[in-house]
Image (cartoon, rainbow, N blue to C red):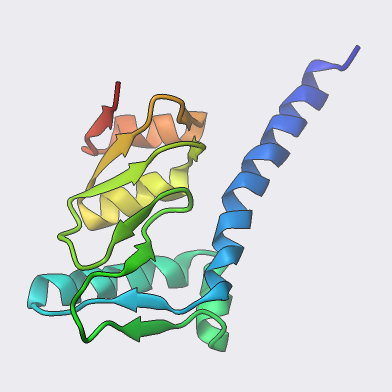
Length: 145
């Protein structure tokens, strides 16, 4: 029989792994960015600041391992908007969609920074810290049926 502290530690390790692994996948290709107006430019700057503040992606961006590519065609190629769900960078950032996985406090902090609402899939799990951060902020959370 496993003790309660061991179960809590296992849950924490699972959460950290599910949060870090997708972020490391950012290294596989440049993040495409569409900037056609001031709103998209401001959204991109907020995204860079959030990336720099992150303890995993900040050093990657500073070292040049994480890079961006300007999408001059304006077709809004997919870029990572959250660790679990891609979103088109060319669209206005009014929501962050997560179809499956875990909603963490980092994603909630990003939604606060970008003034975006969170659209969650039916099976998305919300961590206790994320739930607390949602309560303290004005982030709208919508769960899909």
